[in-house]
Length: 112
Image (cartoon, rainbow, N blue to C red; front, side):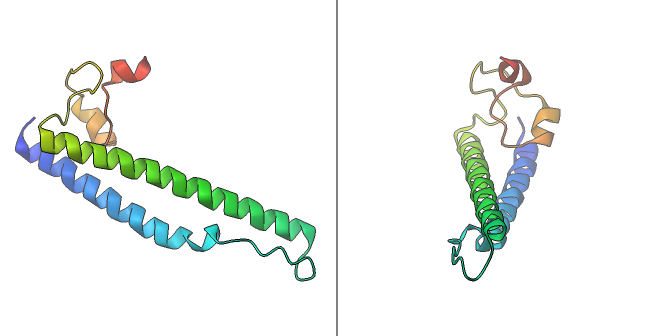
C-alpha cells in the first residue's frame, strides 16, 4: 500500500479518535451514580435513570473497543502491516478500508 493511502487512512483514524474523545466528554454525565432518593423521585423515574446510566456505560464500552481497534490499526501502520489481513495476510480491499480504516481482516476472513 502506498504512503498516500496510508496517510489518508491515518488522518481518518485520527479524526475518529478525536470524535470518540468528544463523545466521552458528552457521555460522562450519563454515567454518574444515580441518586436513589425515594422522596425526591418516583420508582419509574429511578428505573429510567438507572436504564439511562446502563446505556451510557455500554456506549462508553463500545467507544473504548473502537479506541483499541484504532490503536491496533496505528500499530499495523507503524509496522508496515497495515492494509493486510491479520488472519490470512491477503490485502484488504480498499473499499473495505474506506468504510472502516480500523478493520483488521479481509472480507473472506470476516465471514468466517
